[in-house]
Image (cartoon, rainbow, N blue to C red; front, side, top):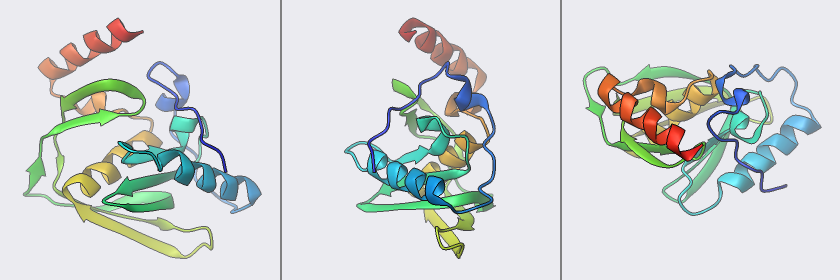
Length: 162
């Protein structure tokens, strides 16, 4: 296991959709170990594989003292009537937080290292995390979801950091 360096905005790996995991081999087991170790730090809620430079569909989370992972996640349900629009941040966009609209509830399905089906669901912060991490795996950043006026300010702030 290793604490991995976080890739930041501007790195092309963050804008490239990740490939599905087809074989659970030593490389994938090592990736999951690294995702779990790297997310296990105060202030970290979630971490997608491409944020540590690996273009495979897997992410880890660290919410309410629960740490876990899912391989090949896909969102299967979002609340349609209830939303949240609090500030959202990202390890790949360090130090910047902007109001981001997300569904209040989300459910993700994927697999674990044994190939068994995994269902991860939650409300509020967990729902935000699930949506945020699946976006990463699709090559999106939360900045892409901001309202136009907010996105303009956010992109200016990002440019000032580069």
